[in-house]
Structures are given as C-alpha cells and as structure tokens.
Length: 443
Image 1 (cartoon, rainbow, N blue to C red):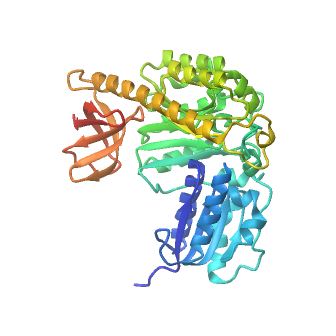
Image 2 (image 1 turned 45 degrees about the horizontal axis):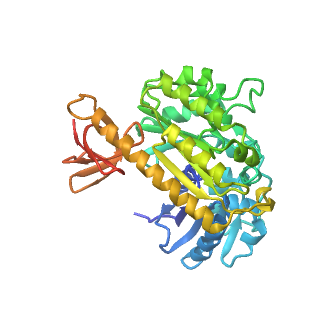
Image 3 (image 1 turned 135 degrees about the horizontal axis):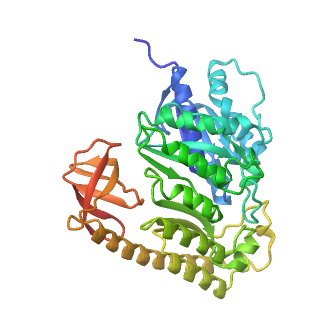
C-alpha cells in the first residue's frame, strides 16, 4: 500500500471561525491524499492559521511561524495576522506562502501546488478581505465531537479597540440553504452543531438589510432545528441586542437549541460601552438578557469582559461588577485591555495603568468564581436523582471509567463509572460540585 502523498500539520490560533476553517483545510487535504500529523512533527508543510485580536496574538503568531520552520519543509501562513501584516509574515525565514482570509477558500489547492513544486505565484498573495467565497466555505466531515458551521464572515462594527473588521472585512453571509445542507450532512455523524461567525448576530444583514437585526439568524436556527438528525444546536458569541422579542419568541421554544448563550458584552458601564463604540447601553443589555431568562427558565449565560479600557475609572469598573452580579454569568472570560496598534483606543488619553488592569481582572474573576459556585450548587440540587431531572452531557473525554463533557447548559460534568463513547449524549444525575465542575452518575 502506498503511503500518504504528503504530510501536513495545522496549527489554529484564535477563534472558532478559525477552527472551522482549519477543519475545512484538513478535510480537503485528506481528500488530496495528505496525512495530517500533530504540530511539531516533521512534515512537508505546516499551516499556521493566525490571529491578530491583540498585540500578544501577533507575537504568538510570529513565534509559531518561526517554530514551524524548524520541522516543516514549507510554512504556509494564513488568517488575520497574515491579513494585517502580510509583508512581515512573508519576510519570516522558512515561509513559502502567505494568504489572508479571502484566500482561505482555495488554500488547500494552493498548498498542494506548493508541495508539488507547481506553484509559481508570489509568496505574498494577500488580497482585501471582501470575497464572498471565504464566507461560503463548507465542511462535509466532522473533525471533532461537536461540529462548527461557519454561517458568516466579517463584521460591520467599528469598535474602537478592535481591528477584526479590518482583518475580516464586511459581513458576508453563507446562503440560508447552504447552511441547512451543511447541517444536514454534518448531523449524520455528530450530535451537536455550533453555528458561528465573526459577528453571527449579523447573519443575513447583507442579504436583507431592511429586515431587523437578528431576524434572519432566528429563522435560520428554526430551520436547522427541523433537521431530523440534529440533536443539539449551539451558537457562537452574540451581540446582546440580537435578543429582541422576535428572536427570543422564535428560538426559546425550540427543543434542540441549547439553553446557553455566550454574549459579547465587553463592559457593564454605559460610559465605557460608548467609548468602545458598542451598539448598546448596559440597561439595554440587561433588558435583553432578562427577556431571554423570562422566556427560557434555567438559561445560562457566559460573556467576554474587558477591564481597564482607557478612561475606566473605579466608578465605571464598579458598574461592570454590579452588572455581572445582576446577570449572574456562569462563565466570565476576562481580558485586561491590551493596546492594539491601528485602533482608535490605542491612541486614547487616560490609559489605565497595567497593575490596575490586572488588579481589576483578579477582583472580577474572584466575584465570577463565587457566582459560578453558587450557580453550580443550585444546578446540582435541581438535577439530582431526587429531582428526577437529569442533565444531558455530550461526552468529550473518557479515562479509566470517568467520562467528562458539557451539559446542555454548558456546565462541565464528570461522570463516574461511565464508559460511554466520545460523542455520545448521556443522561446524568448530579451529586456534587467543587465550584468549577459538577460530578454525577449516569441516570
């Protein structure tokens, strides 16, 4: 039997959209006879799918590119850092090819040309990130326990701290029917689908700009819910303003939509939100969250929070703390503000000292952990054997009779005496929590 045509490794930095795109590269390369090996193993080509959300992301992207040159014959660079800093990426020793986000849809074909020696183009082939083709990438084979489906690319927001709208371009949505077909194919081999995008809440706005924000996304979710083989539907990060009466009314009754939402909140202070150029006030966000909580009892939320944004006083930080206490987030993803060259916020006056940023991050993290511990204690009580209301855990890991995964509310659960297969959904009665995980037994 002949061996693989070429060996390739893929490293993904950054968001779920990057992960989806890397899965699409992997699938196409395997179809072309390549073997995908772990990053760090000697290989014919290493693909680095980069991130540029912070200056630290850029640094890590450069570091991984240089590292790859030590074990790969060819280093291929793509993603947001490549889009923003194409010349810099192209100049790193060992790099054979650089494309931005628009070139991702044809990257697997180009990699094959580079490997065969038939590629005769420039090392730097980055073009403006406006092509609809990058939004229309599809995946026909699940690459992990839950499958992501990229439903849109790009962002029309111009947040003062963010460069992603420059790196990804404007909103371009995957056609509704194409998403449904992709979901139909992937759901035959995986139980959980995650609909994701750079600004998923903006799905369809480029098709039907006159429709209210979020309506096209709600309709899409409803149609995915109708697919027989789909068991669970999750969503990527959402702008809280998407949770209108229409959106909540449509999705809160769906049997397959997971009752957990990750919100891109960023701050609980209306003054700071305005400086960030977000589209809502803290009051608007609280109202939207309250609307969903009323319609979907037991729903959980997680969110991203930036602390130490320029101009954030102790008073404004206290408003964020109070906001988080009111909502009671299951998970807080806290980021000390980091200057991003090329953004408005990097040039703002009133930059917050680094030590203050990290002190505030630590304080909010402590509060968030306490809230999570309280939520999990209630969760155990509500889903114990006595309650006769099990949770349903998607098994992601198994070891020595202990299975672990996430429940429908995105609570991480460890199941004792469980030998379920990875990818199986297991009913579980909860028994205890340590404030971080819940522990239980198969129902």
